[in-house]
Amino acid sequence: MKIFRSFDGTGRFPGPVLTIGNYDGVHIGHKRIIGRVVEKAQEISGTPMLMTFSPHPHSVLKPDSYIRLITPLHLKEKLVAENGIEVMFVIPFDEHLRSIPPESFIEDILIDTLGVAGVIVGYDFRFGRGGVGDVEILKEFSQKKGFYFDVVDAITVDEEKIGSNRIRRLIMDGDLKKANELLDRPHMIEGIVVHGVNRGKGMGFPTINFETVFELIPGNGVYITEVEFDGRKWPSVTNIGFNPTFEGKKLLVETHILNYSGDLYNRDIVIYFHERIREERKFGNMEELKERITLDVSIARDYFKNRLNARTA
Image 1 (cartoon, one colour):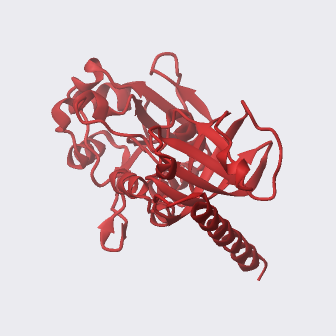
Image 2: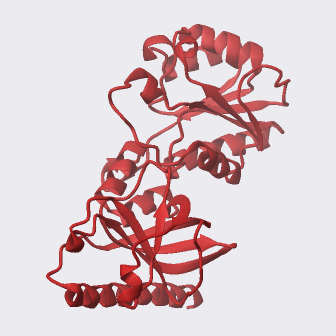
Image 3: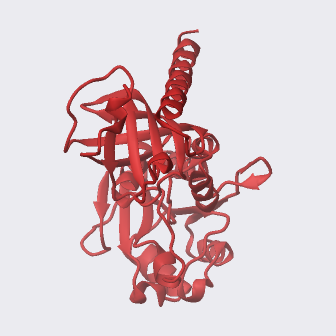
C-alpha cells in the first residue's frame, strides 16, 4: 500500500474509488465500507483508496474533550492495508483543512486533484467548514460531475449502532469480549518489557511488566490475553491496575505467560486481549491472592484449551 501525507506530487491513479473518514479501530462497520470500495474498484479496474486525518479531528475541533485512540496511526495503516486498500492519504487536520468549504473540498481535492471515479462513505460522514458537508452534498456533486457515489448504512448489534465511540467505551469498561466482536479482532496494545518488583515470581507466577504509549488501555481487572514476540503468540493472563493488596499507587500492566520462562527485558511485545476474568480487588493476604491467581490461570488455560478444541473439531 502506498501512503501519502499530502496531496502534492501524488500523481494520478487509474479509476480512484475513495472512502473518507477517521477509521479509528477499523471495526466491522469500517470494513464493510472498505469492502465496498475494493469491490467497486475491481469492477472498473480502478484503485481502492482511503483518506483519513492526523491528528484525529476531534482533538482539533474539541481540544478540551480528550479522545483515546483505539488504533494509533501505524496500526491503522497496517489494518487498512490488510483489508485491500492500495493507496492511503493521511492528511494533517489543521486550521487550513477545517476551513475549506465542502464544495471546494469536492471540486479542488476530490475532482481536480485526485480525479475520483467513485466515492463511498458511511451514512454519518460530514466534512468541510463547520461540518456542513454531508452525504447529500456529495450525492448532488456526483450527479453533476459524473462520478459514482454510494452510502453505507450503519450496522447494528444488540440494537445499537457500531461505532468507534461505542467500542472505546466497551474497552474502557473492560468488556473486551463485546469490543472484540465489534472490532472483528482482539484489541491490542504494543509496548516494551520493563523491570518490576518480582512479587509474582515469589508466588510462583512470574510476570513481565509492560509500558506502552498506546492510549486505550482496558479498564482495571484480570484478562485472558496473548503475548506476541519473535513471531509467536503465547497464552497469558494480564492484570491491569494498582495492586491494591500492596497499596500500590501506580497503574501497572503485568502479564504472566503460560508455559514460558525466559528473559524479555527491554523487548518489544504485543498484548492481545480476549476476555476479562474479573475486576481488580484487594485481598487480605498473600495466600488469598495466590489462590485467586491460581484460579485465574486455570480459567485462562481452559479458555485456550476450549478454543483449540473448537478449531480442531
